Image 1 (cartoon, one colour):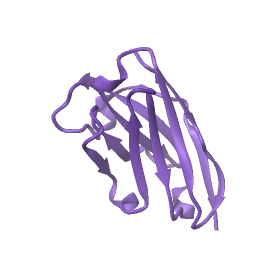
Image 2: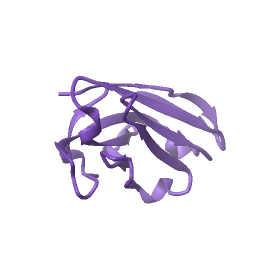
Image 3: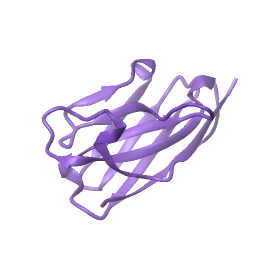
Image 4: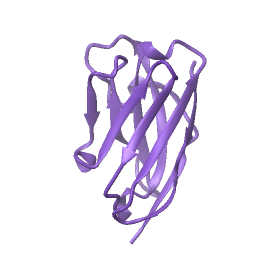
Length: 127
């Protein structure tokens, strides 16, 4: 299992930016896809973005394309989510997750394919 700790959430006005960070520990980080998910009150958890183990293949939900960017630093065991042009509907708890299988050929995006989860960080966007 890998342990994940998110940081960087907070309150921001619409149109603003935030950068979320996820610190990983516990196993060989650079073998696994990583993802960011979010869950708003009364809604299901949904994928925001994912990135392959080698950092070369990002994937994004349609509602964040062009606004958010996922990246990773395997040497530092870190994953980042740069969020810009934030909207009130982006308000949610954001979770970092690690894939369950090594060296995937297609980056995983289904929550069921992620085996470890952080505790989440709250992002609130005011209008």
